[in-house]
Image (cartoon, rainbow, N blue to C red; front, side, top):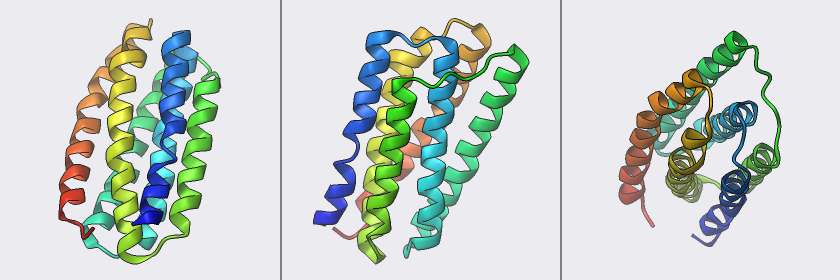
Length: 174
């Protein structure tokens, strides 16, 4: 359980990234990079979980994260191509990547039920923070109507992921 809490301790990197975004009001190119990075971070964690999870529901959830977040990234990349926008790295997207790398590194050290719990606990907190970032920073800051519409369109999937992760969290041994 202590190791599971260590993995959760890595979430402040995302929270810091969101605060950076809130203070600076990211432009559309930065929002695109943030969205792609946030999805990629969860895909990478999902790929690890798919290979390491002992609980079948956790493994299935990991596959869903890979599929769903990969789909969002495809939509985002298609949109920026259509708009001729190059995603622009920012302190926020770099902090997200560092936090994701740290999370995967921490999860790699865990096995069995301890891994499953740490992965799910992190997914609950991560999805909540992504929803908060969408609501408080990304959607309000998006200037392009198509980008804003994409963010609004994918938000319900993040909410569903959060609810699914919360359900699993409650059913896993502590």
